[in-house]
Length: 163
Image (cartoon, rainbow, N blue to C red; front, top):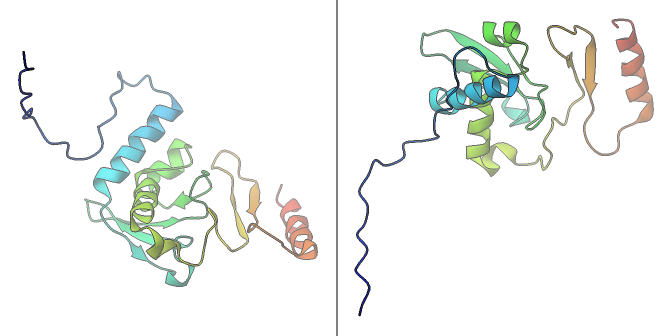
């Protein structure tokens, strides 16, 4: 006896990532970050490179659906040390927003075009930035690999004045 033939299922075609679902306003920071990641993937379709010489690690202008534009600075592809000029980034204290997540997604999709010359996940420059809006102490992100100790020490000593 032969098995019945399987029929191809007809259904809705997936049109992108599944929208995260949360119950009301009682959410964790990780859930809020996931919401911003989803919105970045689905709402940020393009950006303008403001520092094309630095490829993935630089400043980008992102246009919102309301016509406002924001500047996103990418320092690292995995850690939350990036920044955006939008109000959500400033107020939420999550270290990300839909604009940052959208730019990160577009960089990942671009493959080697944005990453050429940079095998690292972080900027090739010394990056001095604020850790977060709640902790206004400056932080430093050094490029990977060998870096002159005297330069690192000089930058660190200057940062101590602000802590």
